[in-house]
Length: 97
Image 1: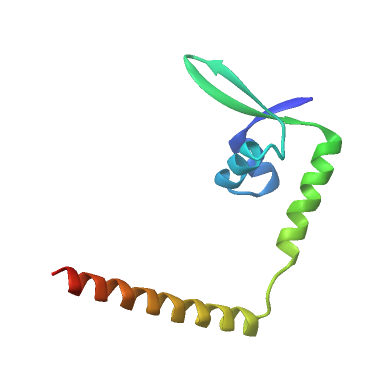
Image 2: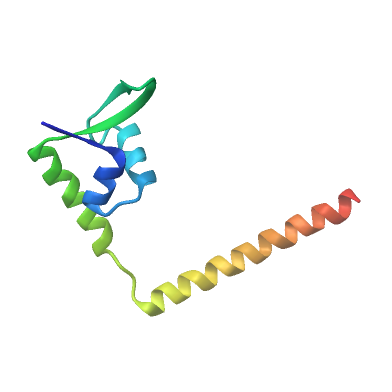
């Protein structure tokens, strides 16, 4: 088993540091907390079998990309939803005054 820091693991798999932290907290990858210089540092334990399953999950999530039309439609829906939510917030603010 090899120990690497969360940042090194993120660079190794081209993930964000935040996603690696979520994986550690969700127990998707094994980790160890070690105290160095008075600070607790988390290390990810790399095992070959585990790495294969993790890399498959990462590939699956990146392979499901939308077409431009689908993404455009999704973003337009999101903009409409946010406009409605903003109007509700504005109404509450006006009523509070």
